[in-house]
Amino acid sequence: MSVVLAEEVVFSCPEIEPSFELMAKNLASQGYSLHLNGLNPNLLDSLYEYIQTMPADKFKRAGIGREDNLILNESVRTDQVCWINGESEAGQDWLNWTASLQRYLNRNLFLGLFSFESHFAHYSTGDFYKTHKDAFKGEANRILSIVVYLNPDWKHTDGGELVLYQDQTQVEILRVVPNFGTVVAFLSEDFPHEVLPATRDRYSIAGWFRVNSSAGDKVDPPR
Ligand code: OGA
Ligand code: MN
Image (cartoon, rainbow, N blue to C red; front, top):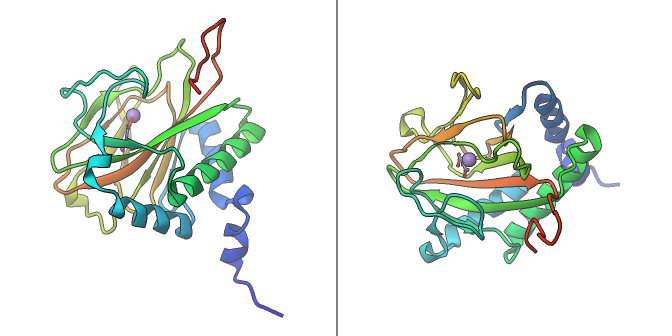
């Protein structure tokens, strides 16, 4: 008979990750959810290992808007991104995890999440992303934003926090230190947010769950 550690039992079944339940509760009650250890350690380590092997030229200057409709605007954001399409094993594992999160949230919150897009992001020293929203009311596309941080030993003095503001009032409601393994999710239409400049390289994955807003001959999201 083999002895299985409790943690392995939990993490071997992606459908019942403990963080999913807490995330659903927090999203329902306050619209955002912060997890200091939000990803299972195997997935986190493989994403971290992968991002370290990625050549710098895989990262491209980020734009404003969607992948197919980019506007470069250096006064708003200066980071570099690489879209995740599942070509790497780590990327595919990440997409499997977000797919199971999507199923869980759809079953428990009835969000009607339909598709998911995400990218690795690299902020060099001094890079920033000024206050913005990931979606606009009425456009009904991006519903839920999720960000994962891949920076071991981040110090408070390193900067680079993600700051979430209350809509309308601009009152600060959450400051996220981009430390390794931290996961934050928030309703895309509800929270303006910004990335403050850091004193060292800062790596994250940002992703968005979308609803299917196809209308007429416009197929959205693009396949
Ligand atoms: C974004 C974003 C936050 C972060 O890419 O839209 O807000 O902390 N990223 O990297
Ligand atoms: Mn954003």
